[in-house]
Length: 396
Ligand code: PMP
Image (cartoon, rainbow, N blue to C red):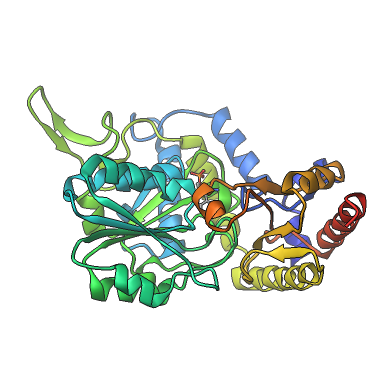
């Protein structure tokens, strides 16, 4: 199945010399995305604006249905288009501002991507609320007791990543969310950007209030993101952006907002992207996701085991997921990355948009390697050849 899946990605024919191990940054794109996007631009128009755009509006709204089905959203109207995870999280942070007062608390973890850190920091500064940053335990997870002790009637928002983009470690939200519900009335926000490619997510079963992710992390286009929320919570958000298509009535004195989802979607959306995403989601539905994940996690297990065997390599947080960070003793991550890049191995080095986390880990940067369903054993062999050569050059 892996070979068939890999064939869907033009990258491998076009860049046969490259090994792509940076899917946590963005996944490669299947041919279907390029085809759907080109088809859209060949016959472009807008959506929901005129009489003649029926086919496009249908595909556009179908994308919403497909997201709602895949994530088990409460309703199709509970799926809001955004430009990405960052935009989605900003919509929530901005939309909740009116609910916060000085002395309230916003809880995040130290392991957040800047996209799930800065909007809360800014919201705290704007409202006089306190930003409480939770540490992690030795498993790189939030500790039940530390969480429980941090919660109180003052806690108004808890915003956490489901999977870290640095370590690939997943937070045990099935345990954490009930703790949050028992000990506070906080609104719970999950950044699921790093989970959507490698896990089936049921938003109602997890029971957070809001979820944010980007299409480009799950084989879709850039410039498309999704905010999923409980309908009742979405309806309470003050829009971040005002303009066309989000209102029922307006005059100089007053504004009557449209219903969900449109009240949170002012302006012409990324129609090409969203229609392309519809095609990607239809295509993804044709594959047995559980089976694809089985192969992916098996490959990840091999990776952990072999990398762990190098005496000078330290893996950050022994996760099991297809993303991992590592450092090599006494070596700068950028030097290793440069040697690997020369060998046409694409992975990421640096701070991964998570400066507070890197500082907490006492690292100036790490090498991050991330797999998706198209990666195979050959990619790993090339990676380990590359590591061997890099270590030899650096005389380790
Ligand atoms: N959160 C996490 C965990 C991420 O990995 C990323 C992307 N690296 C983001 C948020 C931000 O996503 P985007 O840049 O697509 O808005």
